[in-house]
Length: 178
Image (cartoon, rainbow, N blue to C red; front, side):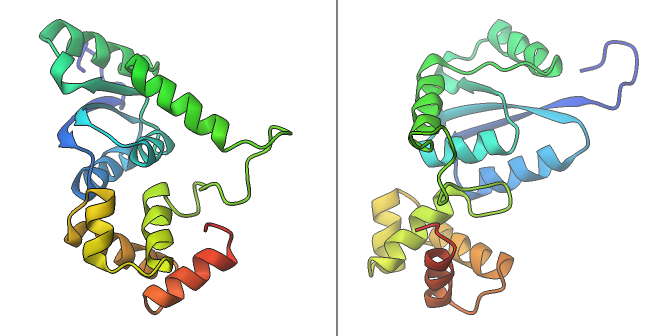
């Protein structure tokens, strides 16, 4: 947003029907840019992906069906100020998910994903691999394409320097992700 002076900060707009691997890649690139805030406009998003989005620092999300010119303008201004704007249903999902990640003492569970660990969607895929499912079955179960499942497994094995799917499952078990 340009208001006559250069601040070095900016607001990027990312629009997607569903939050998939392509959207995650785009979002990761956008948030890596110094001081760039993102307004995410989505048709739908699942809870594990919502956690990934929030962990990347996105605080402004709009439902595509609810976007008007004025609503989008308000969201961009909100993001530019560093504030959050989430639809009530997503806020409820987020609060519920965060509550499930806490134990009785208010401490984060050992197997909750961390910034340096696995994303929730990666954990979901490896849990299903551990259950003996193949790529096609996992894709159907999680409503992803087979290519997305392969990309997720490849990303995990590359990031943690693992040899194959079995090694990835063993690593996830050892580290307490699954």
